[in-house]
Length: 462
Ligand code: UDP
Image (cartoon, rainbow, N blue to C red; front, side, top):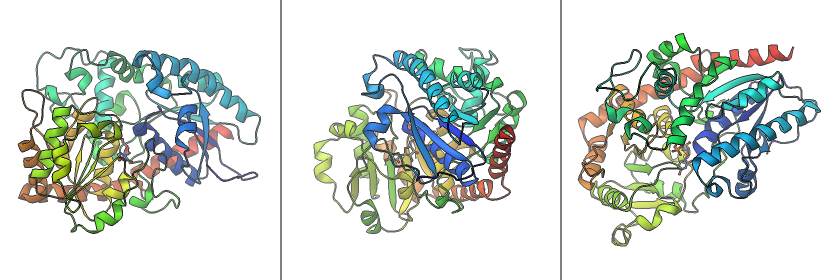
């Protein structure tokens, strides 16, 4: 928690309110640190469940406070369904967010602006009730945001009659490149509704913030901005990995999973430079038993050392024979890592990823080539961009039975690690890293946008 700062003069106070999952907390926490480094007081509102169960200690810069999602004892796992969780989050969240604003009203630092997750559009009503600025924060790529924008506004009608589909501002998209809620018709209707509802009232928000950087998605940023003006404020990566300006942020700092006790750094040091494949499917994806088995043997067959994050809930899917065969020299399996620290190690040569947006933009900002094995939601579209637009990776081909076979996994790893095309991917990744650094450095597009946003908040106060 933030150290006591009584009497400190802040230019304004922002309250950041993420959707309570790892991939949403990380970018908002990091953005809050950026704002704090520019003289604002920043408070991150997390759920009571996360606050009590995770013992978070995010940063010396960002204050923590709590709201309720209506499931204070068990969080999401306590809910009967996605739909019921989202509806409790809205009712309990609105009420407790209002309480928080009222609490700060009585202090030296009343809230000036709520930065709310685009998955929680009702937070704008709370901001407006108290006459505060409301800034909506999109945690996914601008490409994906724009697809949902078009569908929400009836400008892209479902079902899409034929593929590939050509949409101004976007690359040509096949069905499998679409976000999975479209691709697998009828899957997760509550989540699909939620991602479309991001645009229910975005036009009424005082600012639309997107976690990307201008040159990464220039065409779609320009196209979408004509209909829905937005600010690119990414990548929200701890600045130590970019321009080294904010001192206390070597990690995001709020892990919802227990960090593995293995000494990852020491293990990495035993490996040759650029030799290790880092494998992670993020916080939410689960693979079938068969897929885990194929993945295990595919990684084994690739001949490369690998560091694989296998969440506790996935561990039983790993074949015993595989566990017996791999040696400590060749492979390290961990429950959860400090991913950015791992990605920035010079021992890592490739990120084998599910292409969650944070993982994708982290890899791009650190300059790593990827094997893309998307699972669901926006990951399929991110994988398309990784392979065909930014040309920093190869996407696995899924078999007719829906399984990516071990030979395919092995082929993709070898392609990134050993082929001439792989070298080009690594060079392209370095180029994107340089552009990410440029965006967040003084005078860069992201830095300018953040300064403009801070000015807006300061003006609101005066
Ligand atoms: N992450 C981590 N340790 C791990 C795996 C993931 O710190 O072992 C972090 C990763 O750096 C990223 C986030 O968890 O910031 C996952 O977000 P992403 O959007 O990639 O995937 P999601 O979990 O939302 O599917």
